[in-house]
Image (cartoon, rainbow, N blue to C red):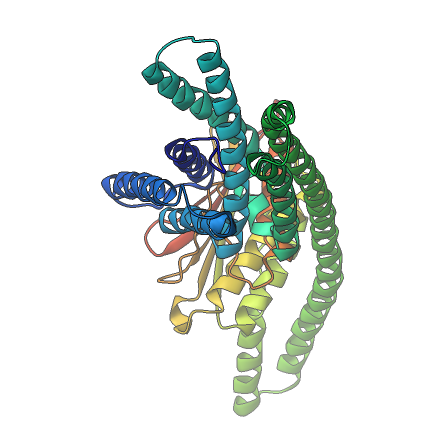
Length: 438
């Protein structure tokens, strides 16, 4: 008896179907669809030819052949997805275990039908393809809830090695006993039992992997929740600091205005007058923001305009702050604080200071408040992810990106929405909030 009862072409198909399923979760590489179909067909052919060619190799070469088969799966995922290496390795491991389970289960059903003399050979092949495909679809749908872009961005080598260990353990347990049975060292009844248990062992492996991923998801959700709460508190604390600072600035501003008035009354010296005019002009330039109708927004804008001046950026605002009266103070801080922090951080990277522009608008559109914070980005356009947020360019991705998430969370709290757009050379953040009924 061969060291693997499952026909090699059947194993190749199961692995191909699993890879295609995981590509559906990760997203195919953007571009020519004909190219993707071509790669898929080529992978199926190569995988089938390789496994059929190595069908009768000595047992000592079995492990290297399986390793190369897994490498082909990894190669296909790498070619057809835009994911990073860690994501591809993680997905390849899950796809391989899925293929092991679907192939062993579908073949068990096939063997049972052949033993019962149900149908012809062609019917058995069709049955295997249908059963393995159906099982792959079910398992991929279950995994898709985990393999979100946020989840995969936070996966590290630690989680990847954990998945690799679980998959390898399940694979060894399901195959070592099977190889022993094929070596002829056990009785026929025990061989049949091992054959029956093989799909069960693979299923248990998938169940453990599922539980492991559930724990990772819970940990990540708790971490994100804590991080967003930290962002919310940070923005409010910044607002309180800005409020105290702005009060001192306004006091100093009015004091200097009175001093200038007194100095003008004391002397008619032309040179002194020019100096006073210049001083007054500087004071006007440092008048940070006009009143928008919302004290919280005025304070945030004043502080951010001051930050923009330090990086030689231009921040303009057209806002009817009275429209924000129904928002809590912390929510105004969250939306405008995070949005302006991101915008100023982005324009600071632009070499041409004339193009360091940030714009803010708060207007009424029918029964909604429209908030738009936009900044010039030029060629440095951020990549927008599937979840509608943009992918952070910071190296520490696990601890960043919560600013936009907190804005979206705040918008949804008021039954509103947040979207990001990239018209031409600009990056725009749109927040749409329904106005409360009068």
